Length: 397
Image (tube, rainbow, N blue to C red; front, side, top):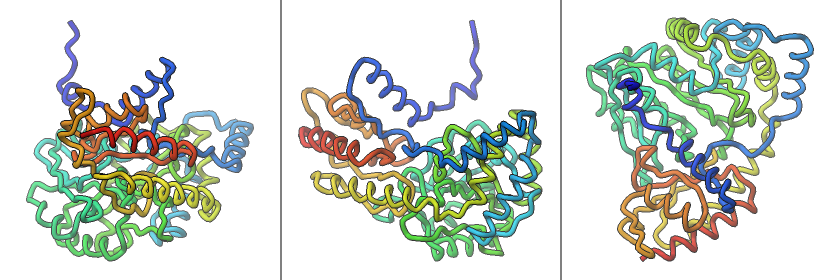
């Protein structure tokens, strides 16, 4: 009999992937399911990036790549970080990976072991806790509710720090809430963190360009904590390159070298064609994304306006990414046709069966009072989904 590892048995399946699978199964049965569960832009990769990939193939960039990434790609990332974020790095501080998820895993595996504590503000991205679990660390979750725009204050952060704290992981703009930390809020975090120089922070900035307030702020901009911050980014979201699989870190050199060592034993270097295509994205003016960002902004307003017409649904106004994270606690305990809603997961399953709309429970993101709605879909699709959701929720009593 096969004995699976304790590590695997303790790991949760990604809730977003699980719900996406369920919606695909229903579609295969002929059901008209609208899936708003995955964080994937419904735009295509810009043509100039695809052209760069074709050119790379024609020039026979089809061999193994350096583990840390091509030099010219890492140099283009250095230029991008200086141009867009005001951050100064050298190419030996950049490690390119097969997606930002691998970038985060590399850092966690490089730093965390048994007994180490990792502070994770909630709501959090579903994979943070599971990656910490694989590294045999302990996650210390800090909760920030909708009344605080789902953002953890510097005071909350400091209160959670113990002698065992080694790492903090957070995202801005945030998946799943769309909340964006301001410069002032990050400044307050930096004032706390500088007192604890042995603590490293993973700042997940994959949604950097999808913000509706005009300018993204990076934690690493503050000189006193620059050497404590690992900035994680990639091309999946803003550049609509989810299938290309490329993420990267900008980190203190010691951490970059550690991640290079880990990656060298797991995957080695990222796809050669993807790397060459990414140079085109890094060197491009982010202004070319303005139409896509405007479309997301319009969709956010459409979804928020629709949710605000449903009795019992509480919303905030997310400033970035492409998610809303409404509080649905009003519906806990209600029922329809013998189906009782005891949890946010129950509500998502009810909406999947009754409204044929796939969403993700907030429990997977650390907030059992909420659900995540991705608005990476057309306005027509979102309008229909919101109509279905409203009809189904109004049945609950």
